Image 1: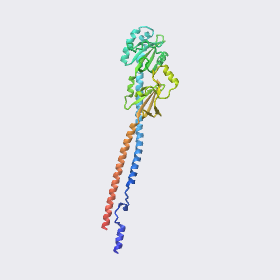
Image 2: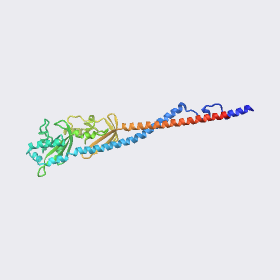
Image 3: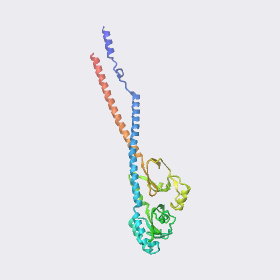
Image 4: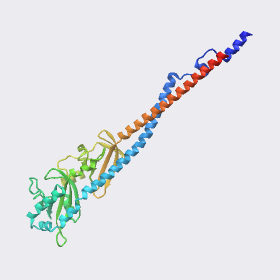
Amino acid sequence: MKNEETCLLNSAFPLDKSPSKLGYKPRGRQGILLILLGALTFALVCYGASYRFYLSIETEKAESASEFSASTLRHIMWQHQPLLYAISIDQRSRNATLGTEVDNVNPWLAKLASEAQLEAIYLLDHTGLTIAASNYRDETSFVGENYSFRPYFTEAMKGELGTFFAIGVTTGTPGYFLSLPIHDSEGRVTGTTVAKLSVSLFDPLWKGELSSGFIANEDGVIILSSDPHWLYRSITQLTEQQLQLIKEKRQFADKVITPLDWISNGEFAQLSHKELIHSITTLSETDWQLHQFRPTSIAKQQAALVAVIVTAVLLSLLVWGLAIRARRIRIQLQESEQNRREL
């Protein structure tokens, strides 16, 4: 009888106190691997979602920077047009194109160029010959030079506003040229007034935080850039006709125009071994294109930081939860053993 009672007690409350007998099985290495695999998967999903979020923010910043740069560019290009117009209608300019009072015009133009911070202001007659210039005292004076081959001269002689970017054939320095016609008292075009803007005036375009980019002219040749290695490269392959016209206009001196080594789909670009957010703004006045870039690495770094932090928090909570569960199981085992002993 006593042996039967002992068997009943042992069957109800087994002496084996291993957790597996009470329904708790340790995860072991397989469980740890599953947890790490789950954490890695969660981190990757979190990184992807965060990257898309931060990438949209960086794209908005790039677009805002592009709009600001386009506004700055327009201001730089056209801020001297009123001055140029005032010179073109001044009687001294009219007289100079007719061959009178030329000696008095040179000092006047020099003073205006200095006050306006222009590289040069000069007057051309109806043949394209420079009859007066602000740099008349320099070794590289424009006086006596003929620029009839320049598009800004032919456009102004048609009575239109002329614009052109080129490397100066006399000075060898690049600049932006702005021209207006000079009319006589009967309204006939007798000459042209021209202002040359130094490329240094365009430096504010690339002063923004992480700002980089370039400006391509109507032929797709990079004329202004935050990186000097991109200058005078073409963003597409130029045709033989385009190259011939550039040569006839003597636009880029002896520069050899080669295609830029880059890949772009309009939204992103691969340039200088970097992945960049790409924003494009077209200036309808000149058919120039402003290309603004912002590195995607910023979004990647922020997304990686978020993924690490969130995953670390999740793992901490998981470990905390497992610790609480283990503690409860340990308490239950102790209570079970106590009950067994009491029985």
